Length: 401
Image (cartoon, rainbow, N blue to C red; front, side):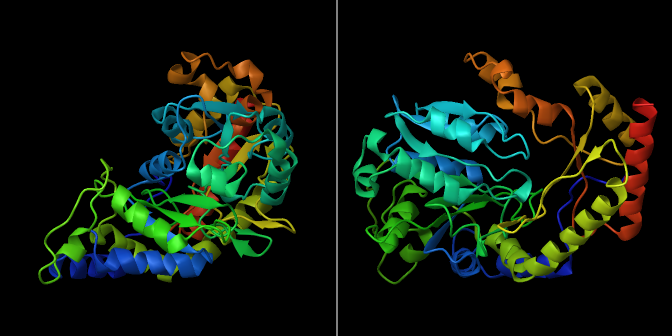
C-alpha cells in the first residue's frame, strides 16, 4: 500500500530527538525557544510562540482577543472542524461562508456580506496550502470599518476586525512574495503528523500586528497563558534562586516540548528541499491528468500566490458524490491510499444539530463531492507517483465508463 502522508522520520530526526532526550531537558526549553526564533526568521513575522497544536493556539488567541458570547467569527464552510470548534469553545458564533467558485478558499463576496457589528475576527483558511486573497480581505475590512464595535482593549487598539489566518496547510506558501506568517495580523500553523512540517503534534502562532502593539509584551503574555498562567516557565525556574513564581490568571496547558521542537528544527532547516520535492510531484500529477477531460487539476501557483504544495486536490468533472466515493474505493483496491479534504462542516452531525444547512453553501458541496486528495510527501518516489496516476486513471474510467 502506498500511504497517503507519512511523516519524514529519518536518522537526522532520530539523532536530534535522541540528543534532546539525553540533554536532560525534554519539556519546553532551549530547543523550543530556538524553534520559535527560526520560525520568526523564516516567515518574516514579528514574533512566534510555539504551542501544542493549532487548535489550542487558536483558542488561546481568540480568548486573548476578547472573543466570547455574542461575537461572530467568519470562517469558510469548507474546512476542518477545528476551525469552527475553537470558535464555539469561546461561546462565540461561527458564521460560515461559501467557497469561491474557482478554488477551495472562502468567497470574498460572501465575507463582505457576512460582516456585522458583532464580527470580531475573520479566519481565512488556506486550503491545501494556497493562500487566500489577503489584500482583498484587508480591503473588505477597511470598507466595513464603520460597522466595527470593539469589545476588548485589544480590539479597541486595533480598531477593526482582526484577520487570524488558519494556515494549518500553508507553512512556506507565498503571497506577493511574502511568506505566510507575515501577511495576516496573526497566523496559526499546524505541525501535526500529516503536515508538510511536523513536530508529531504541535503548532505555532506568528504575530504581525500594527506598530501600536508591543510584540515582546504579547510574547510574554502568551508564554504565561499557555502554561497555566504561571509568571515563569520551567526553564526560567531552574535559574539559581528563581524557584518562586506566581499564577497571574487561570491559564491553559498547551506549551510545546523540546522533543517536539527537536523534530521541527530538523524539518525547518531542510524545508526547502521538502517544498521542491512536493512541487515536482504536483507537476507530475498535472502532466498526467491534464490530458484527461474528466480531470480538474488544482490551482497552486499564479502571479500573486505560490502554494506550500500540501494537498493535491484533484476534482472529477461531472461526478456525483456517490461516484467519487466509488472511485476512491477503486483506488484503494489498487493499494493506493487517498483522502478527501474536506467534508464541509454543515455535513457533520455536530453542525447540523446547530442548524447549519448544506444547501446554503453550494460551491463548498460541489467542490467536496468531486474531490480526491492524492499522496504528496517527500519520500514518495517517482515510481510510486506513476503508480498513483495509473490507479486514479483506471479507477475513474472504471466508474465513469
